[in-house]
Length: 485
Ligand code: ADP
Image (cartoon, rainbow, N blue to C red; front, side):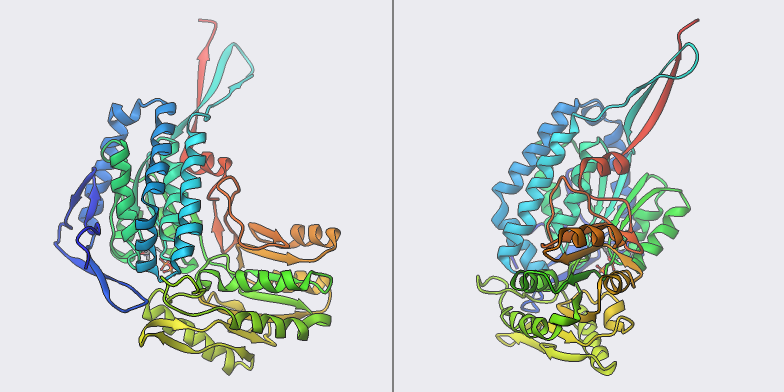
Protein backbone atom coordinates (compact mmCIF):
# COMPACT_ATOMS: atom_id res chain seq x y z
CA UNK A 1 0.00 0.00 0.00
CA UNK A 2 1.59 3.22 -1.10
CA UNK A 3 1.72 6.20 1.24
CA UNK A 4 1.30 8.86 -1.40
CA UNK A 5 -2.00 7.65 -2.87
CA UNK A 6 -4.67 10.23 -2.04
CA UNK A 7 -7.49 8.43 -0.30
CA UNK A 8 -9.55 10.94 1.69
CA UNK A 9 -12.37 13.29 0.77
CA UNK A 10 -11.29 16.45 -1.02
CA UNK A 11 -13.48 19.33 0.18
CA UNK A 12 -12.65 23.04 0.09
CA UNK A 13 -9.08 22.33 -1.08
CA UNK A 14 -8.36 20.17 1.97
CA UNK A 15 -8.32 16.48 2.83
CA UNK A 16 -10.97 15.24 5.22
CA UNK A 17 -12.21 11.97 6.65
CA UNK A 18 -15.81 10.95 6.17
CA UNK A 19 -18.04 12.26 8.95
CA UNK A 20 -18.85 8.65 9.81
CA UNK A 21 -15.18 7.69 9.76
CA UNK A 22 -16.05 4.89 7.33
CA UNK A 23 -13.70 3.71 4.61
CA UNK A 24 -13.88 1.22 1.77
CA UNK A 25 -11.26 -0.73 -0.12
CA UNK A 26 -10.32 -0.09 -3.69
CA UNK A 27 -8.99 -3.21 -5.34
CA UNK A 28 -6.58 -3.82 -8.20
CA UNK A 29 -8.58 -6.21 -10.40
CA UNK A 30 -5.44 -7.61 -12.01
CA UNK A 31 -4.12 -8.92 -8.70
CA UNK A 32 -7.05 -8.92 -6.30
CA UNK A 33 -4.95 -6.84 -3.90
CA UNK A 34 -6.22 -3.81 -2.01
CA UNK A 35 -4.57 -0.68 -3.42
CA UNK A 36 -5.69 1.45 -0.50
CA UNK A 37 -8.70 2.17 1.69
CA UNK A 38 -10.65 5.28 0.77
CA UNK A 39 -12.82 7.57 2.91
CA UNK A 40 -16.44 6.62 2.27
CA UNK A 41 -18.50 9.75 1.71
CA UNK A 42 -22.20 9.81 2.56
CA UNK A 43 -24.94 12.43 2.92
CA UNK A 44 -23.22 14.57 5.61
CA UNK A 45 -20.05 14.70 3.50
CA UNK A 46 -22.02 15.65 0.42
CA UNK A 47 -23.58 18.44 2.56
CA UNK A 48 -20.11 19.71 3.44
CA UNK A 49 -18.95 19.55 -0.18
CA UNK A 50 -22.04 21.35 -1.45
CA UNK A 51 -21.58 24.05 1.23
CA UNK A 52 -17.98 24.49 0.06
CA UNK A 53 -19.11 24.71 -3.56
CA UNK A 54 -21.83 27.27 -2.73
CA UNK A 55 -19.30 29.32 -0.81
CA UNK A 56 -16.97 29.22 -3.82
CA UNK A 57 -19.74 30.60 -6.05
CA UNK A 58 -20.08 33.56 -3.69
CA UNK A 59 -16.34 34.06 -3.28
CA UNK A 60 -15.08 36.99 -5.40
CA UNK A 61 -11.97 34.95 -6.19
CA UNK A 62 -14.20 32.70 -8.28
CA UNK A 63 -17.40 34.67 -8.81
CA UNK A 64 -15.60 37.73 -10.13
CA UNK A 65 -12.63 36.04 -11.75
CA UNK A 66 -12.11 37.19 -15.33
CA UNK A 67 -12.94 34.59 -17.96
CA UNK A 68 -9.39 34.99 -19.19
CA UNK A 69 -8.01 34.03 -15.77
CA UNK A 70 -10.39 31.07 -15.63
CA UNK A 71 -8.99 29.95 -18.98
CA UNK A 72 -5.47 30.23 -17.60
CA UNK A 73 -6.33 28.07 -14.60
CA UNK A 74 -7.77 25.36 -16.83
CA UNK A 75 -4.73 25.50 -19.07
CA UNK A 76 -2.47 25.17 -16.04
CA UNK A 77 -4.48 22.20 -14.86
CA UNK A 78 -3.93 20.56 -18.25
CA UNK A 79 -0.19 21.19 -17.85
CA UNK A 80 -0.23 19.73 -14.33
CA UNK A 81 -2.04 16.60 -15.54
CA UNK A 82 0.47 16.24 -18.33
CA UNK A 83 3.38 16.67 -15.92
CA UNK A 84 1.95 13.88 -13.74
CA UNK A 85 0.76 11.65 -16.55
CA UNK A 86 2.71 8.54 -15.50
CA UNK A 87 1.42 8.69 -11.94
CA UNK A 88 -2.17 9.25 -13.07
CA UNK A 89 -2.01 6.52 -15.72
CA UNK A 90 -0.59 4.08 -13.18
CA UNK A 91 -3.38 4.88 -10.72
CA UNK A 92 -5.98 4.46 -13.45
CA UNK A 93 -4.56 1.09 -14.45
CA UNK A 94 -4.31 -0.12 -10.85
CA UNK A 95 -7.90 0.89 -10.14
CA UNK A 96 -9.52 -0.18 -13.41
CA UNK A 97 -7.32 -2.97 -14.81
CA UNK A 98 -6.91 -1.47 -18.28
CA UNK A 99 -3.52 -1.65 -20.02
CA UNK A 100 -1.14 1.09 -18.90
CA UNK A 101 -0.54 2.30 -22.46
CA UNK A 102 -4.31 2.82 -22.88
CA UNK A 103 -4.45 4.80 -19.63
CA UNK A 104 -1.46 6.89 -20.58
CA UNK A 105 -1.98 7.60 -24.24
CA UNK A 106 -5.73 7.29 -24.83
CA UNK A 107 -7.38 8.23 -21.52
CA UNK A 108 -4.89 10.79 -20.25
CA UNK A 109 -4.15 12.09 -23.74
CA UNK A 110 -7.79 13.04 -24.18
CA UNK A 111 -8.06 14.38 -20.63
CA UNK A 112 -5.30 16.91 -21.30
CA UNK A 113 -6.86 17.85 -24.64
CA UNK A 114 -10.24 18.36 -22.97
CA UNK A 115 -8.90 20.82 -20.36
CA UNK A 116 -7.08 22.76 -23.09
CA UNK A 117 -10.13 22.83 -25.34
CA UNK A 118 -12.40 24.16 -22.58
CA UNK A 119 -9.68 26.58 -21.46
CA UNK A 120 -9.99 28.00 -24.96
CA UNK A 121 -13.75 28.29 -24.62
CA UNK A 122 -13.79 29.91 -21.18
CA UNK A 123 -13.34 33.47 -22.45
CA UNK A 124 -15.49 33.13 -25.56
CA UNK A 125 -18.88 32.80 -23.93
CA UNK A 126 -21.24 35.71 -24.38
CA UNK A 127 -24.87 36.61 -24.77
CA UNK A 128 -26.60 38.50 -27.56
CA UNK A 129 -28.39 41.79 -28.09
CA UNK A 130 -31.84 41.10 -29.44
CA UNK A 131 -33.89 43.49 -31.60
CA UNK A 132 -37.19 43.46 -29.67
CA UNK A 133 -40.29 45.58 -30.35
CA UNK A 134 -40.68 48.84 -28.44
CA UNK A 135 -38.20 51.21 -26.86
CA UNK A 136 -36.13 48.61 -25.10
CA UNK A 137 -32.63 47.33 -25.08
CA UNK A 138 -32.81 43.56 -24.66
CA UNK A 139 -29.74 41.48 -24.13
CA UNK A 140 -28.90 38.05 -22.82
CA UNK A 141 -26.29 36.95 -20.31
CA UNK A 142 -24.93 33.45 -20.07
CA UNK A 143 -24.48 32.69 -16.41
CA UNK A 144 -23.12 29.58 -14.69
CA UNK A 145 -25.79 27.12 -13.59
CA UNK A 146 -24.34 27.04 -10.06
CA UNK A 147 -23.25 23.90 -8.27
CA UNK A 148 -22.87 20.98 -10.66
CA UNK A 149 -22.89 17.44 -9.28
CA UNK A 150 -20.87 15.14 -11.51
CA UNK A 151 -21.35 11.39 -11.11
CA UNK A 152 -19.00 9.23 -13.10
CA UNK A 153 -18.44 5.54 -13.93
CA UNK A 154 -15.43 3.26 -13.55
CA UNK A 155 -14.58 2.52 -17.17
CA UNK A 156 -12.77 5.78 -18.06
CA UNK A 157 -12.55 7.33 -14.61
CA UNK A 158 -10.53 10.49 -15.18
CA UNK A 159 -11.75 10.94 -18.73
CA UNK A 160 -15.43 10.79 -17.82
CA UNK A 161 -14.82 13.13 -14.89
CA UNK A 162 -12.95 15.58 -17.09
CA UNK A 163 -15.58 15.61 -19.83
CA UNK A 164 -17.84 17.16 -17.18
CA UNK A 165 -15.50 18.99 -14.81
CA UNK A 166 -13.59 20.89 -17.52
CA UNK A 167 -16.61 22.51 -19.22
CA UNK A 168 -18.39 23.06 -15.89
CA UNK A 169 -15.40 24.98 -14.52
CA UNK A 170 -14.82 26.77 -17.83
CA UNK A 171 -18.35 28.15 -17.58
CA UNK A 172 -17.75 29.37 -14.02
CA UNK A 173 -19.62 26.72 -12.00
CA UNK A 174 -18.48 24.97 -8.84
CA UNK A 175 -18.35 21.18 -8.86
CA UNK A 176 -18.92 18.27 -6.51
CA UNK A 177 -17.56 15.15 -8.19
CA UNK A 178 -18.63 11.68 -7.01
CA UNK A 179 -16.38 9.17 -8.76
CA UNK A 180 -17.31 5.50 -9.09
CA UNK A 181 -16.60 3.45 -5.98
CA UNK A 182 -14.46 1.00 -8.00
CA UNK A 183 -12.11 3.74 -9.29
CA UNK A 184 -11.91 6.82 -7.05
CA UNK A 185 -8.16 7.48 -7.05
CA UNK A 186 -7.47 9.66 -10.09
CA UNK A 187 -10.39 11.98 -9.31
CA UNK A 188 -8.94 12.64 -5.85
CA UNK A 189 -5.56 13.48 -7.32
CA UNK A 190 -7.31 15.77 -9.84
CA UNK A 191 -8.85 17.78 -6.99
CA UNK A 192 -5.45 18.26 -5.45
CA UNK A 193 -3.84 19.26 -8.75
CA UNK A 194 -6.59 21.83 -9.32
CA UNK A 195 -5.77 23.43 -5.97
CA UNK A 196 -2.06 23.37 -6.74
CA UNK A 197 -2.54 25.36 -9.95
CA UNK A 198 -4.66 27.96 -8.16
CA UNK A 199 -8.37 27.05 -8.29
CA UNK A 200 -9.92 28.69 -5.21
CA UNK A 201 -11.20 26.47 -2.43
CA UNK A 202 -14.53 24.79 -2.97
CA UNK A 203 -14.48 25.17 -6.76
CA UNK A 204 -13.76 21.47 -7.25
CA UNK A 205 -14.67 19.01 -4.49
CA UNK A 206 -14.33 15.25 -4.76
CA UNK A 207 -16.38 12.93 -2.57
CA UNK A 208 -15.79 9.22 -3.15
CA UNK A 209 -18.46 6.84 -1.92
CA UNK A 210 -21.18 4.52 -3.10
CA UNK A 211 -23.96 5.30 -5.53
CA UNK A 212 -26.97 4.70 -3.36
CA UNK A 213 -25.56 6.78 -0.50
CA UNK A 214 -23.17 9.53 -1.64
CA UNK A 215 -24.44 9.52 -5.25
CA UNK A 216 -28.11 9.68 -4.30
CA UNK A 217 -27.43 12.36 -1.68
CA UNK A 218 -25.78 14.51 -4.35
CA UNK A 219 -28.69 14.06 -6.76
CA UNK A 220 -31.25 14.92 -4.10
CA UNK A 221 -29.39 17.84 -2.53
CA UNK A 222 -31.36 21.11 -2.84
CA UNK A 223 -28.11 23.06 -3.03
CA UNK A 224 -27.09 21.32 -6.26
CA UNK A 225 -28.35 22.95 -9.45
CA UNK A 226 -27.43 20.39 -12.08
CA UNK A 227 -26.42 16.75 -12.33
CA UNK A 228 -24.13 15.51 -15.08
CA UNK A 229 -24.23 11.73 -14.98
CA UNK A 230 -22.49 8.97 -16.90
CA UNK A 231 -23.37 5.40 -16.02
CA UNK A 232 -25.90 2.66 -16.65
CA UNK A 233 -29.35 3.26 -18.10
CA UNK A 234 -30.93 1.69 -15.04
CA UNK A 235 -29.21 4.08 -12.60
CA UNK A 236 -29.79 6.97 -15.02
CA UNK A 237 -33.54 6.47 -14.59
CA UNK A 238 -33.17 6.58 -10.80
CA UNK A 239 -31.07 9.73 -11.06
CA UNK A 240 -33.74 11.41 -13.18
CA UNK A 241 -36.47 10.43 -10.74
CA UNK A 242 -34.46 11.63 -7.72
CA UNK A 243 -33.53 14.90 -9.44
CA UNK A 244 -37.17 15.63 -10.24
CA UNK A 245 -37.92 16.49 -6.61
CA UNK A 246 -35.76 19.62 -6.85
CA UNK A 247 -36.14 20.05 -10.65
CA UNK A 248 -32.44 19.95 -11.31
CA UNK A 249 -31.06 20.27 -14.75
CA UNK A 250 -30.06 16.70 -15.63
CA UNK A 251 -27.89 15.26 -18.38
CA UNK A 252 -27.44 11.53 -18.76
CA UNK A 253 -24.86 9.65 -20.79
CA UNK A 254 -25.97 6.03 -20.43
CA UNK A 255 -25.54 2.57 -21.84
CA UNK A 256 -25.34 1.33 -25.39
CA UNK A 257 -25.55 -1.70 -27.63
CA UNK A 258 -23.93 -0.12 -30.62
CA UNK A 259 -24.08 -1.70 -34.08
CA UNK A 260 -20.92 -1.92 -36.17
CA UNK A 261 -22.27 -2.55 -39.69
CA UNK A 262 -20.02 -4.20 -42.26
CA UNK A 263 -21.15 -4.17 -45.90
CA UNK A 264 -19.80 -6.59 -48.51
CA UNK A 265 -18.13 -3.72 -50.38
CA UNK A 266 -16.05 -2.68 -47.33
CA UNK A 267 -12.29 -2.94 -47.07
CA UNK A 268 -12.50 -6.25 -45.22
CA UNK A 269 -9.16 -5.99 -43.48
CA UNK A 270 -9.98 -2.51 -42.16
CA UNK A 271 -13.46 -3.64 -41.11
CA UNK A 272 -12.09 -6.60 -39.17
CA UNK A 273 -9.61 -4.35 -37.44
CA UNK A 274 -12.34 -1.79 -36.72
CA UNK A 275 -14.72 -4.42 -35.38
CA UNK A 276 -11.95 -5.83 -33.17
CA UNK A 277 -11.03 -2.46 -31.68
CA UNK A 278 -14.71 -1.53 -31.56
CA UNK A 279 -15.57 -4.27 -29.07
CA UNK A 280 -12.30 -5.29 -27.44
CA UNK A 281 -10.74 -1.90 -26.79
CA UNK A 282 -11.03 -1.10 -23.09
CA UNK A 283 -12.07 -4.74 -22.46
CA UNK A 284 -15.44 -3.84 -23.98
CA UNK A 285 -16.17 -1.80 -20.86
CA UNK A 286 -16.97 1.09 -23.15
CA UNK A 287 -20.44 2.59 -23.39
CA UNK A 288 -19.97 3.04 -27.16
CA UNK A 289 -18.53 -0.47 -27.67
CA UNK A 290 -19.47 -1.93 -31.05
CA UNK A 291 -20.98 -4.95 -29.35
CA UNK A 292 -23.30 -5.92 -32.22
CA UNK A 293 -21.35 -6.62 -35.39
CA UNK A 294 -23.81 -6.68 -38.30
CA UNK A 295 -22.34 -8.35 -41.38
CA UNK A 296 -23.73 -8.61 -44.93
CA UNK A 297 -24.52 -12.22 -45.68
CA UNK A 298 -22.34 -12.56 -48.80
CA UNK A 299 -19.15 -11.99 -46.76
CA UNK A 300 -20.46 -13.36 -43.49
CA UNK A 301 -18.42 -16.59 -43.23
CA UNK A 302 -15.22 -14.97 -44.41
CA UNK A 303 -15.71 -12.10 -41.96
CA UNK A 304 -16.51 -14.31 -38.96
CA UNK A 305 -13.34 -16.33 -39.61
CA UNK A 306 -11.12 -13.27 -39.89
CA UNK A 307 -12.78 -11.57 -36.91
CA UNK A 308 -12.30 -14.65 -34.70
CA UNK A 309 -8.62 -14.86 -35.67
CA UNK A 310 -8.23 -11.17 -34.88
CA UNK A 311 -9.94 -11.66 -31.50
CA UNK A 312 -7.52 -14.47 -30.73
CA UNK A 313 -4.65 -12.03 -31.16
CA UNK A 314 -6.03 -9.84 -28.34
CA UNK A 315 -3.53 -10.85 -25.68
CA UNK A 316 -4.98 -11.13 -22.20
CA UNK A 317 -2.35 -10.20 -19.66
CA UNK A 318 -0.86 -8.04 -16.96
CA UNK A 319 -2.09 -4.48 -17.61
CA UNK A 320 1.42 -3.16 -17.02
CA UNK A 321 2.89 -5.30 -19.87
CA UNK A 322 3.34 -3.59 -23.21
CA UNK A 323 2.00 -6.56 -25.14
CA UNK A 324 -1.30 -6.74 -23.26
CA UNK A 325 -4.41 -5.86 -25.23
CA UNK A 326 -7.06 -7.00 -22.76
CA UNK A 327 -6.44 -6.16 -19.12
CA UNK A 328 -8.41 -7.20 -16.06
CA UNK A 329 -12.18 -6.86 -15.88
CA UNK A 330 -12.86 -4.11 -13.34
CA UNK A 331 -14.25 -6.34 -10.57
CA UNK A 332 -15.14 -9.92 -9.79
CA UNK A 333 -18.79 -8.92 -9.81
CA UNK A 334 -18.47 -7.50 -13.31
CA UNK A 335 -16.64 -10.61 -14.51
CA UNK A 336 -19.45 -12.77 -13.10
CA UNK A 337 -21.88 -10.65 -15.09
CA UNK A 338 -19.87 -11.06 -18.29
CA UNK A 339 -19.65 -14.83 -17.76
CA UNK A 340 -23.40 -14.90 -17.17
CA UNK A 341 -23.88 -13.42 -20.64
CA UNK A 342 -21.47 -15.95 -22.16
CA UNK A 343 -23.65 -18.70 -20.69
CA UNK A 344 -26.82 -16.95 -21.87
CA UNK A 345 -25.40 -16.74 -25.40
CA UNK A 346 -24.70 -20.46 -25.44
CA UNK A 347 -28.07 -21.31 -23.93
CA UNK A 348 -29.93 -19.23 -26.51
CA UNK A 349 -28.20 -21.08 -29.35
CA UNK A 350 -25.61 -18.56 -30.53
CA UNK A 351 -22.38 -20.11 -31.84
CA UNK A 352 -19.37 -19.44 -29.61
CA UNK A 353 -16.60 -19.04 -32.18
CA UNK A 354 -13.79 -18.10 -29.84
CA UNK A 355 -13.07 -16.99 -26.27
CA UNK A 356 -15.58 -17.02 -23.45
CA UNK A 357 -13.03 -18.38 -21.00
CA UNK A 358 -12.57 -17.01 -17.54
CA UNK A 359 -8.90 -16.90 -16.73
CA UNK A 360 -6.17 -15.48 -14.48
CA UNK A 361 -2.73 -14.01 -15.02
CA UNK A 362 -0.02 -15.48 -12.80
CA UNK A 363 -2.83 -17.22 -10.94
CA UNK A 364 -4.52 -13.95 -10.02
CA UNK A 365 -7.10 -11.40 -11.12
CA UNK A 366 -10.35 -11.16 -13.08
CA UNK A 367 -9.75 -11.93 -16.72
CA UNK A 368 -11.72 -13.24 -19.68
CA UNK A 369 -10.60 -13.99 -23.24
CA UNK A 370 -11.90 -11.99 -26.21
CA UNK A 371 -15.22 -13.58 -27.07
CA UNK A 372 -16.98 -13.83 -30.43
CA UNK A 373 -20.48 -15.23 -30.81
CA UNK A 374 -21.72 -15.77 -34.38
CA UNK A 375 -25.20 -16.61 -35.76
CA UNK A 376 -26.73 -14.31 -33.17
CA UNK A 377 -30.35 -13.39 -33.52
CA UNK A 378 -31.19 -9.72 -32.88
CA UNK A 379 -33.65 -10.69 -30.18
CA UNK A 380 -31.22 -12.72 -28.10
CA UNK A 381 -30.16 -11.39 -24.73
CA UNK A 382 -26.55 -11.00 -25.89
CA UNK A 383 -27.79 -8.80 -28.75
CA UNK A 384 -30.14 -6.70 -26.64
CA UNK A 385 -28.53 -6.16 -23.23
CA UNK A 386 -25.40 -4.20 -22.52
CA UNK A 387 -22.73 -6.68 -21.39
CA UNK A 388 -19.93 -4.20 -20.74
CA UNK A 389 -17.27 -6.78 -21.44
CA UNK A 390 -15.23 -8.18 -24.36
CA UNK A 391 -18.11 -10.07 -25.95
CA UNK A 392 -19.09 -9.51 -29.59
CA UNK A 393 -22.38 -10.66 -31.10
CA UNK A 394 -22.14 -11.16 -34.87
CA UNK A 395 -25.45 -10.91 -36.71
CA UNK A 396 -25.94 -11.45 -40.46
CA UNK A 397 -28.05 -9.08 -42.60
CA UNK A 398 -29.40 -9.25 -46.16
CA UNK A 399 -29.36 -5.72 -47.57
CA UNK A 400 -29.24 -2.08 -46.53
CA UNK A 401 -32.86 -1.95 -45.35
CA UNK A 402 -32.32 -5.04 -43.24
CA UNK A 403 -29.10 -3.49 -41.87
CA UNK A 404 -30.93 -0.28 -40.90
CA UNK A 405 -33.73 -2.23 -39.28
CA UNK A 406 -31.39 -4.43 -37.26
CA UNK A 407 -29.07 -1.55 -36.35
CA UNK A 408 -32.03 0.31 -34.85
CA UNK A 409 -33.59 -2.73 -33.17
CA UNK A 410 -32.41 -1.71 -29.70
CA UNK A 411 -33.54 0.52 -26.87
CA UNK A 412 -30.14 2.22 -27.06
CA UNK A 413 -28.75 4.82 -29.43
CA UNK A 414 -25.30 5.83 -28.36
CA UNK A 415 -23.05 5.10 -31.33
CA UNK A 416 -22.66 3.10 -34.53
CA UNK A 417 -20.05 2.16 -37.11
CA UNK A 418 -20.51 1.67 -40.85
CA UNK A 419 -17.98 -0.01 -43.13
CA UNK A 420 -18.43 0.48 -46.88
CA UNK A 421 -16.62 1.92 -49.89
CA UNK A 422 -19.91 3.33 -51.24
CA UNK A 423 -20.17 6.95 -50.17
CA UNK A 424 -23.92 7.14 -50.80
CA UNK A 425 -24.55 4.08 -48.65
CA UNK A 426 -22.35 5.53 -45.91
CA UNK A 427 -24.30 8.77 -45.73
CA UNK A 428 -27.66 7.05 -45.95
CA UNK A 429 -26.71 4.81 -43.06
CA UNK A 430 -25.44 7.82 -41.09
CA UNK A 431 -28.82 9.48 -41.61
CA UNK A 432 -30.91 6.39 -40.79
CA UNK A 433 -29.14 5.08 -37.71
CA UNK A 434 -30.65 6.46 -34.53
CA UNK A 435 -27.52 7.16 -32.51
CA UNK A 436 -25.62 10.15 -31.19
CA UNK A 437 -22.42 9.26 -33.04
CA UNK A 438 -21.87 7.45 -36.34
CA UNK A 439 -18.37 6.47 -37.41
CA UNK A 440 -17.79 5.67 -41.07
CA UNK A 441 -14.84 3.38 -41.86
CA UNK A 442 -13.49 4.01 -38.39
CA UNK A 443 -14.57 3.43 -34.79
CA UNK A 444 -14.05 4.92 -31.34
CA UNK A 445 -12.86 8.33 -32.47
CA UNK A 446 -13.18 11.09 -29.87
CA UNK A 447 -12.16 14.71 -29.85
CA UNK A 448 -12.72 17.41 -27.28
CA UNK A 449 -14.45 19.47 -29.98
CA UNK A 450 -16.95 16.83 -31.13
CA UNK A 451 -20.17 16.24 -29.17
CA UNK A 452 -20.80 12.81 -27.70
CA UNK A 453 -24.00 11.44 -26.18
CA UNK A 454 -27.07 9.35 -26.73
CA UNK A 455 -30.36 9.04 -28.55
CA UNK A 456 -33.18 6.93 -27.07
CA UNK A 457 -32.40 5.20 -23.76
CA UNK A 458 -28.71 6.04 -24.11
CA UNK A 459 -29.66 9.35 -22.51
CA UNK A 460 -29.69 13.01 -23.42
CA UNK A 461 -27.35 15.95 -23.27
CA UNK A 462 -23.93 15.91 -24.85
CA UNK A 463 -20.42 15.88 -23.50
CA UNK A 464 -17.58 17.64 -25.36
CA UNK A 465 -17.87 20.35 -27.98
CA UNK A 466 -18.68 23.98 -27.40
CA UNK A 467 -22.46 23.83 -27.80
CA UNK A 468 -22.76 21.11 -25.17
CA UNK A 469 -20.82 23.20 -22.67
CA UNK A 470 -23.11 26.16 -23.19
CA UNK A 471 -26.25 24.05 -22.99
CA UNK A 472 -25.31 22.05 -19.94
CA UNK A 473 -23.27 24.41 -17.86
CA UNK A 474 -24.76 27.85 -18.47
CA UNK A 475 -28.20 29.35 -18.20
CA UNK A 476 -29.52 32.27 -20.18
CA UNK A 477 -30.82 35.44 -18.57
CA UNK A 478 -32.76 37.96 -20.62
CA UNK A 479 -32.37 41.60 -19.49
CA UNK A 480 -34.82 44.33 -20.57
CA UNK A 481 -33.91 48.00 -20.26
CA UNK A 482 -36.49 50.70 -20.98
CA UNK A 483 -34.94 53.40 -23.17
CA UNK A 484 -37.71 56.02 -23.02
CA UNK A 485 -37.88 56.89 -19.35
P1 ADP B 1 -21.83 1.04 -14.07
O1 ADP B 1 -22.78 0.03 -14.60
O2 ADP B 1 -20.95 1.68 -15.07
O3 ADP B 1 -21.18 0.66 -12.77
P2 ADP B 1 -23.59 2.65 -12.55
O4 ADP B 1 -24.69 3.35 -13.21
O5 ADP B 1 -23.86 1.54 -11.61
O6 ADP B 1 -22.70 2.25 -13.74
O7 ADP B 1 -22.64 3.67 -11.80
C1 ADP B 1 -22.24 4.91 -12.35
C2 ADP B 1 -22.09 5.90 -11.23
O8 ADP B 1 -23.36 6.14 -10.65
C3 ADP B 1 -21.18 5.48 -10.11
O9 ADP B 1 -20.45 6.60 -9.64
C4 ADP B 1 -22.15 5.01 -9.06
O10 ADP B 1 -21.65 5.08 -7.73
C5 ADP B 1 -23.27 5.99 -9.24
N1 ADP B 1 -24.59 5.55 -8.74
C6 ADP B 1 -25.06 4.29 -8.60
N2 ADP B 1 -26.30 4.30 -8.10
C7 ADP B 1 -26.64 5.60 -7.90
C8 ADP B 1 -27.80 6.27 -7.40
N3 ADP B 1 -28.88 5.60 -7.01
N4 ADP B 1 -27.78 7.61 -7.37
C9 ADP B 1 -26.71 8.31 -7.78
N5 ADP B 1 -25.59 7.74 -8.25
C10 ADP B 1 -25.54 6.40 -8.32
